[in-house]
Length: 215
Ligand SMILES: [Zn+2]
Image: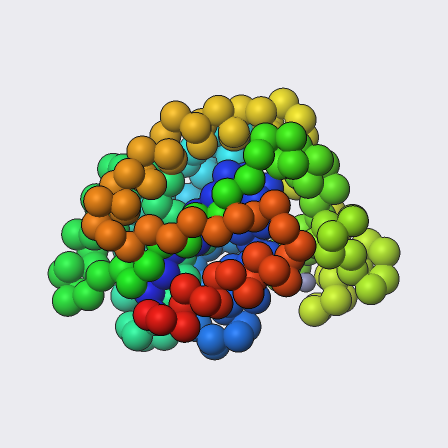
């Protein structure tokens, strides 16, 4: 099972991906998480990447492709993986296809979580992320058991700098212009599945499972 989960920022991609990963015991490859981890470790790649991310911009294709290429070579990614937040441009998608072809494999499905801009703004404002493990929460839809504390690891929850209104607007614009062409790219390959993201969390997940079950 080699899948990619797509959707505009705030559509619940992160939470749904986390559930899939837990349920199917497959590694999650999140460029956002890898960049933040690199940043926290004072890795030059992470520091460079965070300059883009903090302004709501996309990290360059070169840096992003490189961090994914390294990750895909690790043993646990051989049979299954879930890609979260990558590829974001057609150029990255082409690069990913080349990497996978070289490994004698390819993507099994692309899950696209759909949502409206109004719903997205509302959700992003209330989003909180764990400093330690990257788990995501929502102050209304997916509350932590203890306020401000991660259920999984006890880490501190914070609002990401790129979840501010200006940054969210910018990310949605970038999503419209750069990421949507990706949907056409995968649609032509016949591996694109649309999921209605404006439903309760569990219902969205159930719809995703229907797709994964048939892979
Ligand atoms: Zn945590």
